[in-house]
Image (cartoon, rainbow, N blue to C red; front, side):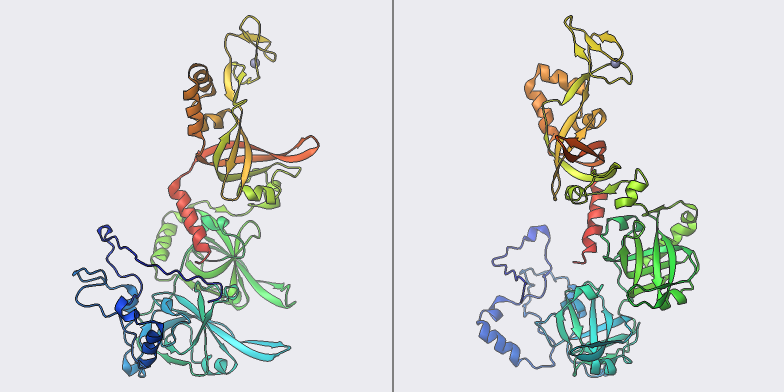
Length: 526
Ligand SMILES: [Zn+2]
């Protein structure tokens, strides 16, 4: 397949002691496959069209030769025969996740969770119409589209919320830019596509969500599509604006929703959805496939394909409702307003998470106003010359002191001499993340945190035991922190550059960091 890599794993050793006993995927025993490709294809061709796909002929032992009964995997469970009373489907019911262009004998049993309006197009090559539906089963989701004749045949047949047997469609590579469905493939209805309403409407789930907590929306890039669930805190009035693209008036309504991450966010509804919205404040809404916009920090906007359900019967909704009625109602909420770009400069000390590459790409610290940001980075090098300086020990002075001829340390500012100085860190560190490198300046507090010692202690160590001193420095490199920084423009030999100062450093909370990474990974919809 174009731009696709197929991985063939040979001589795989299964580590039974690790408790892996289930069959992975749908493998066939070797004997059946060794007859050469030609024979295999022939065998497939000879299979009667309406027979369910054969499960590998494994004798009384399971795939790995254990005598214990192997747990059924999900694929097998969903591959039940469709009851013949529903119209003689003798083909196996396939899970949506199992569909691929390599298989054409299948029937899926799926619920229509969304049906578009009919769209008409006119271009140089002609005109036509199309509609699409989103189909859902226990294994996953897929988008299906009907063009022209198939639009006529199936538009009225398929109703939102209903379950159908569907077979004989073309399976194509998904055009993800037109869809918020997380599937590699999509279906298109063809002349001989068969669609039949299922009598048993209950065995297919209603909707599938992959919720992002409102507190984490700031980490999702704009224009991504996510699912959210929240309590309606405020319903704003319906208004009308003129669409920039069509120049036609369009209705608009903003909602403010909140969740237990104690964040609120604005969600904009459009057109009929805005007009028809009649849910009271305090209800839970689950929204699928909503667009992340960077307007006013972060906000959410419904696509025509986004779906919303009010007080859905799912665990997340019940726990949110419980939280809101209990304590949530009276809590204060943070917003995603004022994060990023020019807004952060205007509002002062709002800090935004940046990668090191972003610092350069976005010219952080290169404008009139200082920028503030946070970044997760690893110390890879600590400059050893000038790691600390001898400072005045007087309270809140911190001026550099100079040793005079009689061994006393003199502070010009205090106009006083002291028997010994108080060393303070003034470190320059080189940090890296997965995107790039930067030099950070750190002062005493952060230096103590990085070194785990005061500058005085480190200075003394250097005098007494050079190796122990080097060990401390080596121990401090390759450590990772969340750095809170200020970036200010500076000039060196006529060249403007960003001077990056660490204001604070915290060690990584791996649980929290993993949670954030999971949200990010999920946002890619892989
Ligand atoms: Zn002083």
